[in-house]
Amino acid sequence: MSSIYYEEELKELNKSGLKYLIVGGIAVNLHGLPRLTRDLDLMIDINADNLQKFVKVMKKLNYATKFPINEWQGKSAIAFFSDQDDSKQIDVLLKNPIDFKAAYKRRKMFKINEASFNCVGFDDLLKMKEIAGRDRDLIDMGYLKKFKSEEKT
Image 1 (cartoon, rainbow, N blue to C red):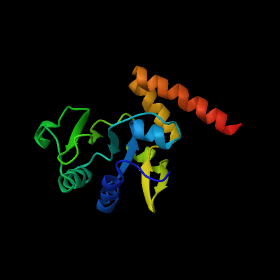
Image 2: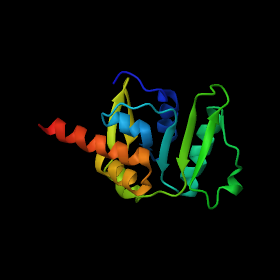
Image 3: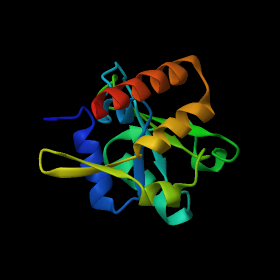
Image 4: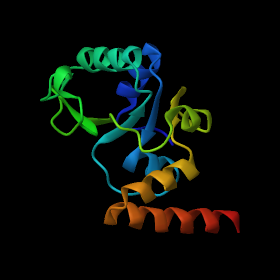
């Protein structure tokens, strides 16, 4: 893979030492199934230090959210929007559907232009899609399983 739309943002996350995993549509793409997606979905280790790192990187990259941090309680995800590019949106999960620490150990690293990025592993991606259970997720699951089985033959 030669480039990724959110490459600069991911490089900044790496520099910050943030523990994150790419999930959602971009994870589906990285695992080999091309499908159109606009936003970058992230699952992070939810602790005060990691959340502070994430917010600091978002500010540095000129991303903002409509919700101040004191209103995050009870939300499952928060969307951050780029002040410089209307087409860019980063969603961070605040309620991780699977255990982050275990998923982080099983993560898949993708190297793009000399930088490595943390992506949720294939089996964990399927599990997250199953938990979400939306039509798009179930369609992704079917195609991912088919793609993986064809890859083995």
